[in-house]
Length: 170
Image (cartoon, rainbow, N blue to C red):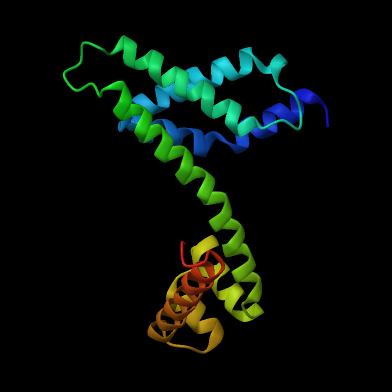
C-alpha cells in the first residue's frame, strides 16, 4: 500500500474518534465539526510528514488539540470561555478515555468470541442489522419478550466478561 493510500485509510478510520475528542473539548457539535474540518486540512497539508507505521492517532490528536486552541483564540470574546488549565484537564481525560476504549473493544471482541454462534448471530441481527425483536423471535421460535430477555442476559454476561478481563476496571 502506498504512503498516500495508508494515510487516507488512517485519516478516514480516525474521523469519529477525532470528532469525539474535539467535541469533548468544545461541547458544541457544530463547532466541533468546523474544527474537525480545519484539523483535516492541516493533516492533509502536512501528510508528507507522516511516516507509515508511526502513531497516526497521537499525531492527529495533537493537531486537533492545536486546532481547538486556535479556535478558542478566535472565540475569546464569547461569554463562556474555559480557562486553559481546565481545557488541558478535559483534553487529558478525553485522551485517556480514548486510549481505554481500545482496550475495552479488544476485551469485548474476546468475550464475543466466547459466546455460542447462535447468541452471536442474535446479537448481530439485532444490533448490527437492526432486525426487530419480532423478526428474530419468529426465526428462532421465540416470543419478542423471550428475545428481549435473552439479549439482556447476553449483554449482562458480556459486561461481566469485559470487567473480569479488565481486573474489574471496565
